[in-house]
Length: 125
Image (cartoon, rainbow, N blue to C red; front, side, top):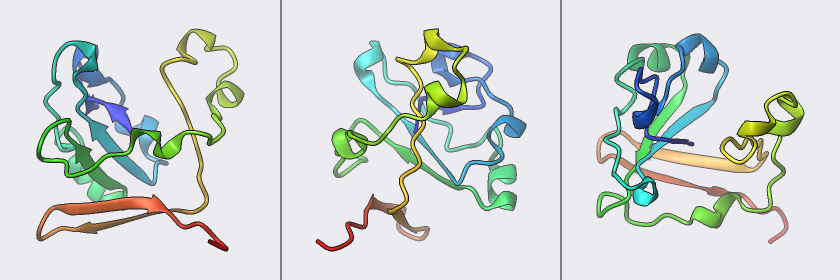
């Protein structure tokens, strides 16, 4: 999950990365969040959409308005943050970047309707 556009050349619009830097991801969700003082327009992965499709990386957008029916921001609370372990030399980014690897995360996307569901499978519950 990333604030704003993935692959933008303007850091104020999102995260300026190349495809090579994210090619190992399983999924990307661009999030439009007004807490920064403005609502960033999402790109729907347009900067590198063909690369995402060809490598099978799931893509979706989460809007901070009526286009998103429900969003539980606390969904990932309590999961360990792996970023300090992966990049210990980047302490100034610890409050901005969080890396998790939940084993029981699932997502379902209906390409025809644009509906996407995401959640956790809780074993034994």
